[in-house]
Image (cartoon, rainbow, N blue to C red):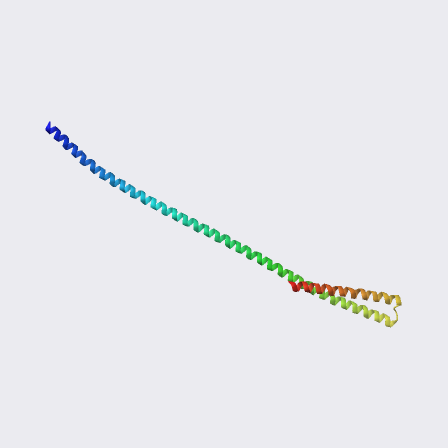
Length: 162
Protein backbone atom coordinates (compact mmCIF):
# COMPACT_ATOMS: atom_id res chain seq x y z
CA UNK A 1 0.00 0.00 0.00
CA UNK A 2 2.92 2.26 0.64
CA UNK A 3 4.00 1.70 -2.89
CA UNK A 4 0.56 2.51 -4.14
CA UNK A 5 0.45 5.65 -2.06
CA UNK A 6 3.91 6.62 -3.23
CA UNK A 7 2.93 6.02 -6.81
CA UNK A 8 -0.23 7.93 -6.28
CA UNK A 9 1.72 10.83 -4.68
CA UNK A 10 4.27 10.76 -7.52
CA UNK A 11 1.51 10.85 -10.08
CA UNK A 12 -0.15 13.65 -8.17
CA UNK A 13 3.03 15.72 -8.03
CA UNK A 14 3.84 14.88 -11.62
CA UNK A 15 0.37 16.02 -12.65
CA UNK A 16 0.73 19.11 -10.53
CA UNK A 17 4.04 19.94 -12.22
CA UNK A 18 2.61 19.61 -15.68
CA UNK A 19 -0.46 21.59 -14.77
CA UNK A 20 1.69 24.49 -13.58
CA UNK A 21 3.56 24.49 -16.80
CA UNK A 22 0.30 24.66 -18.68
CA UNK A 23 -0.78 27.49 -16.44
CA UNK A 24 2.41 29.38 -17.30
CA UNK A 25 1.78 28.80 -20.98
CA UNK A 26 -1.81 29.93 -20.69
CA UNK A 27 -0.68 33.04 -18.80
CA UNK A 28 1.79 33.81 -21.56
CA UNK A 29 -0.95 33.27 -24.12
CA UNK A 30 -3.27 35.54 -22.17
CA UNK A 31 -0.53 38.16 -21.87
CA UNK A 32 0.13 37.93 -25.59
CA UNK A 33 -3.61 38.18 -26.26
CA UNK A 34 -3.81 41.25 -24.00
CA UNK A 35 -0.81 42.80 -25.77
CA UNK A 36 -2.40 42.13 -29.14
CA UNK A 37 -5.69 43.53 -27.93
CA UNK A 38 -3.94 46.66 -26.62
CA UNK A 39 -2.07 46.96 -29.92
CA UNK A 40 -5.34 46.63 -31.84
CA UNK A 41 -7.01 49.26 -29.63
CA UNK A 42 -4.03 51.54 -30.16
CA UNK A 43 -4.16 51.03 -33.93
CA UNK A 44 -7.92 51.58 -33.91
CA UNK A 45 -7.50 54.84 -31.97
CA UNK A 46 -4.82 55.94 -34.44
CA UNK A 47 -7.13 55.15 -37.37
CA UNK A 48 -9.94 57.06 -35.68
CA UNK A 49 -7.62 60.03 -35.11
CA UNK A 50 -6.50 59.88 -38.73
CA UNK A 51 -10.14 59.74 -39.87
CA UNK A 52 -11.04 62.69 -37.64
CA UNK A 53 -8.04 64.62 -38.94
CA UNK A 54 -9.00 63.85 -42.54
CA UNK A 55 -12.60 64.86 -41.82
CA UNK A 56 -11.47 68.13 -40.27
CA UNK A 57 -9.25 68.85 -43.26
CA UNK A 58 -12.13 68.02 -45.58
CA UNK A 59 -14.42 70.40 -43.67
CA UNK A 60 -11.71 73.06 -43.76
CA UNK A 61 -11.30 72.60 -47.50
CA UNK A 62 -15.08 72.82 -47.97
CA UNK A 63 -15.19 76.03 -45.92
CA UNK A 64 -12.38 77.51 -47.99
CA UNK A 65 -14.15 76.47 -51.19
CA UNK A 66 -17.35 78.13 -49.98
CA UNK A 67 -15.40 81.23 -49.03
CA UNK A 68 -13.72 81.33 -52.44
CA UNK A 69 -17.10 80.88 -54.15
CA UNK A 70 -18.53 83.70 -52.07
CA UNK A 71 -15.60 85.96 -52.98
CA UNK A 72 -16.01 85.08 -56.67
CA UNK A 73 -19.72 85.93 -56.55
CA UNK A 74 -18.95 89.17 -54.77
CA UNK A 75 -16.36 90.08 -57.41
CA UNK A 76 -18.84 89.25 -60.19
CA UNK A 77 -21.47 91.40 -58.51
CA UNK A 78 -19.04 94.32 -58.22
CA UNK A 79 -18.02 93.87 -61.85
CA UNK A 80 -21.67 93.97 -62.93
CA UNK A 81 -22.22 97.06 -60.82
CA UNK A 82 -19.18 98.78 -62.36
CA UNK A 83 -20.38 97.79 -65.82
CA UNK A 84 -23.82 99.24 -65.06
CA UNK A 85 -22.25 102.50 -63.88
CA UNK A 86 -20.15 102.65 -67.01
CA UNK A 87 -23.23 102.15 -69.17
CA UNK A 88 -25.00 104.94 -67.27
CA UNK A 89 -22.07 107.27 -67.87
CA UNK A 90 -21.91 106.35 -71.55
CA UNK A 91 -25.66 106.90 -71.87
CA UNK A 92 -25.39 110.32 -70.20
CA UNK A 93 -22.47 111.28 -72.47
CA UNK A 94 -24.43 110.19 -75.53
CA UNK A 95 -27.44 112.20 -74.40
CA UNK A 96 -25.30 115.33 -73.94
CA UNK A 97 -23.71 114.80 -77.35
CA UNK A 98 -27.12 114.28 -79.00
CA UNK A 99 -28.51 117.42 -77.36
CA UNK A 100 -25.50 119.43 -78.54
CA UNK A 101 -26.11 118.15 -82.07
CA UNK A 102 -29.82 119.06 -81.85
CA UNK A 103 -28.94 122.53 -80.59
CA UNK A 104 -26.53 123.04 -83.48
CA UNK A 105 -29.16 121.91 -86.00
CA UNK A 106 -31.81 124.11 -84.42
CA UNK A 107 -29.49 127.16 -84.59
CA UNK A 108 -28.80 126.50 -88.25
CA UNK A 109 -32.51 126.09 -88.87
CA UNK A 110 -33.26 129.41 -87.13
CA UNK A 111 -30.53 131.18 -89.12
CA UNK A 112 -31.88 129.74 -92.39
CA UNK A 113 -35.41 130.87 -91.53
CA UNK A 114 -34.15 134.37 -90.66
CA UNK A 115 -32.13 134.57 -93.89
CA UNK A 116 -35.07 133.37 -95.93
CA UNK A 117 -37.40 135.84 -94.23
CA UNK A 118 -34.90 138.71 -94.79
CA UNK A 119 -34.47 137.68 -98.42
CA UNK A 120 -38.23 137.60 -98.99
CA UNK A 121 -38.62 140.88 -97.10
CA UNK A 122 -35.94 142.59 -99.22
CA UNK A 123 -37.65 141.46 -102.39
CA UNK A 124 -40.93 142.75 -101.03
CA UNK A 125 -42.68 139.44 -101.25
CA UNK A 126 -43.78 139.37 -97.57
CA UNK A 127 -47.08 140.78 -96.51
CA UNK A 128 -47.49 141.96 -92.92
CA UNK A 129 -49.40 138.71 -92.12
CA UNK A 130 -46.60 136.62 -93.64
CA UNK A 131 -44.04 138.56 -91.58
CA UNK A 132 -46.00 137.76 -88.42
CA UNK A 133 -46.17 134.06 -89.40
CA UNK A 134 -42.43 133.93 -90.10
CA UNK A 135 -41.64 135.71 -86.83
CA UNK A 136 -43.91 133.27 -84.96
CA UNK A 137 -42.12 130.32 -86.58
CA UNK A 138 -38.73 131.76 -85.65
CA UNK A 139 -39.92 132.53 -82.11
CA UNK A 140 -41.26 129.00 -81.75
CA UNK A 141 -37.93 127.55 -82.91
CA UNK A 142 -36.05 129.83 -80.48
CA UNK A 143 -38.28 128.56 -77.64
CA UNK A 144 -37.48 125.02 -78.69
CA UNK A 145 -33.80 125.98 -78.65
CA UNK A 146 -34.16 127.30 -75.08
CA UNK A 147 -35.86 124.04 -74.07
CA UNK A 148 -32.99 122.11 -75.59
CA UNK A 149 -30.54 124.25 -73.60
CA UNK A 150 -32.46 123.46 -70.40
CA UNK A 151 -32.41 119.75 -71.25
CA UNK A 152 -28.69 120.02 -71.94
CA UNK A 153 -28.08 121.62 -68.54
CA UNK A 154 -30.07 118.85 -66.83
CA UNK A 155 -28.18 116.15 -68.75
CA UNK A 156 -24.80 117.72 -67.85
CA UNK A 157 -25.77 117.91 -64.18
CA UNK A 158 -26.85 114.28 -64.25
CA UNK A 159 -23.60 113.30 -65.97
CA UNK A 160 -21.51 115.18 -63.44
CA UNK A 161 -23.29 113.35 -60.58
CA UNK A 162 -22.24 110.02 -62.08
